[in-house]
Image (cartoon, rainbow, N blue to C red):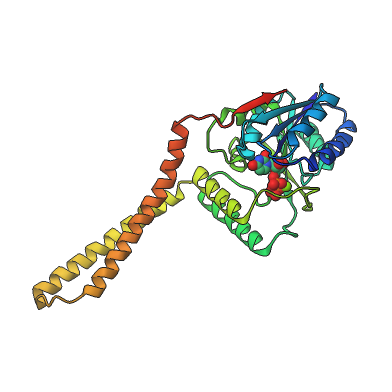
Length: 307
Ligand code: UDP
Ligand code: MG
């Protein structure tokens, strides 16, 4: 039996030595072969050099993929999964926020309890800015209402999967990748382990509030048609209202004659309708933008070097 460990790395030169040491300790205590697939996602620091050193020290178990630029964590995960050969695959962050100590338990659950996937979720959101927690919770509430694909609140990407599940994920070769959704979309029997949130061992997070916000919109657009439906409904409602208003105005003019008033109300209505239309077009545009990127069939990532 072999375990593949996929690690996306973006400017992780400081964290990587800790990560490797800790993870090795845990895996050596498990009765299983291992291989590491590190993906250097266009780091601007010495991450690649560190990976090359690992590779020289342990050429049998350490492999690395070097991207031609930064393609984002989703692309790095995808590339890593493609190169795995193990019977079981885990994806882990390089900053030790995904505690390797959980691996034996996860492995045990898959082997003995017949799960296909064991994911992890944070037990709570302590240590996170309050506003961020608030928006995160709202996001999960919203997406679970409007999408068929279940997204578990606080679930991390850190998970252990069987080969079968990984192959299923690799079949989804879409350009717009929202992994949290893809992992859930493929199905399979999944359970979650909770753990206390951990601080990064070194380096800095690459996510700002704004980038998380945009990421959540990605999730909504990639896994739900609700915004489209909403804008269609707004169109129906404003159409219905305008019919009623039309009849009202025509009848009023026939009965009372036309005294050329109502400029204010007319401008207000025009602005309202115009606003609704622009909003509808904007929503539509988001989906068309996604289609545009899909049909171009650009590769999800470009590899400069592979070892
Ligand atoms: N990462 C990546 N490409 C990116 C951003 C991040 O491969 O463009 C990796 C990063 O090296 C880390 C993981 O994704 O291993 C999670 O990133 P980070 O720790 O910054 O996110 P957080 O844990 O704060 O959500
Ligand atoms: Mg992190």
